[in-house]
Image (cartoon, rainbow, N blue to C red):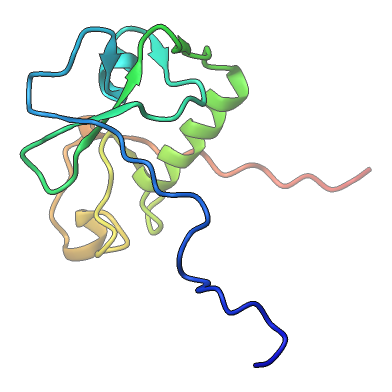
Length: 138
């Protein structure tokens, strides 16, 4: 098209920068992965990774500076309540409404007792809540 810039739009204006990659167990002091930061009670805090470390898997682990890391935010009651509701949805059988102490298989969409009659150990679940009595407005 005439009148438009003929520059290649796929080529970035700024050259791509790369970060150093270290061999396994050879990362310098002062760098840590997210998992290591969490074990220290820290989080990356919005900083970009400064290096990578090779892993056994297909992806490399990202390293962050420990000096720039921030403390982990404390759990609030609202966050704890939201996490409990999310886990309750994964642990509650849709048929019998029992809440188990483990996550139910999503492929069955119910507990084993409701699915195929396998008896459940009573110590592996909590009883469903009693139905609320219906009250008419006075």
